[in-house]
Image (cartoon, rainbow, N blue to C red):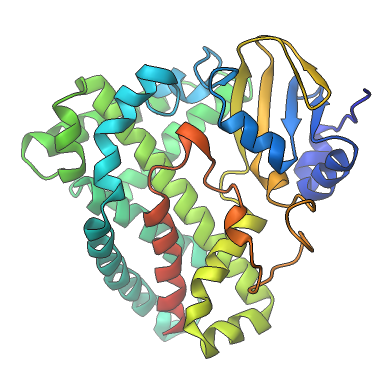
Length: 349
């Protein structure tokens, strides 16, 4: 079968029409500019994410591991379980979620109060980002060093990862930032501040503990900041939706989910084929780079009616893939959802 090709310029300018066009022809497309297969159909995306035997993250090309070392993000099978399982109970506890949601409500109100007198705010930098960073500092017991320092380390490490992904020299800034974060993580566990990390320290080495703390930091800041900013973009550029939330606060969860569907904070997840496989009419070879487009899967018209529209009444909105699926599904999914809902509620107040 012939698969449509797309250029990087196409994808950068506006990815959604390109992804939709590719998906119309086939759910998986070879993109020479990326030297990768790009999956845009939801069914194919779900199958890849749930099949680490054939489509793994455990590959030397995985850029995050080159900066922070092995972690739950970059391993599969028993190694992945060893990295992730020490954190699972802590992040899935209903009591802890309720506790942190109450804390986030107070934090969001404080941030909104700070800019309310002017009546003007850049919501990403004045609400979404600091709320995400403060939440992670509180969650991981990393205060000190505090939210502002965590944001600086996070951005330096992410920049290094992006440089590697683009084929450039990452320099040593990201490595230094990770070293500083590692020292902060170990100090916080030494003095008992880091409740989320203390249980894990008994079963992980210091290097593994720091690497997984960095992964939680990335996920907690990147996905939550992006999800909250995207939600405000959808709600405030179409005032009827904001008016609907003002009239009925119970619609906030639906708004959060629909925003996640339309613009997932992480647009893609990477996998590497471990075997030759004929997959949805594509002949994938062992070692091929496979990009799962969460953004593409979330607008699959075979699953979502009017996939490009923001709808508060979408009955199957929870079928989106914004938090990934399978063994690498987002660890902090409940906290991320709550954080965006809290930010919306604070601004409505």
